[in-house]
Image (cartoon, rainbow, N blue to C red):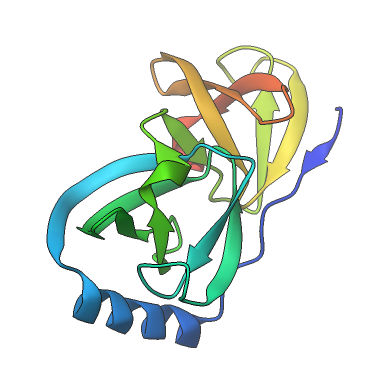
Length: 155
């Protein structure tokens, strides 16, 4: 085994509730739950649609989000932990991505549990999707590491 990838820390529940309330009050148009991903190395998540709103936390490249609504060039979204925030549209794209949802996930050399574990990832590590083989997904981390993960371990 090579290394253990670590995820970003979660935001407290109260903060998520406040963001959700702000989003419901400020969202102007619907975005029909489109799946997007962070397209830059690090992006700020904001409390409202604009740079004048507080930066609450950061998300790294390939982190998937689900767009809920838009306000101008700003997207109100939900992440894999059902946490909400605002992101500028220039910071996301439609690259297929996944994020680990279990405490420890084995990343393997090929699809199947009988293949070598190349490395492990903690909960909250994002990956770009390269290919699929049945329930297995070939993934790539932002640092270039590539492997296979079972689809029940990711969002």
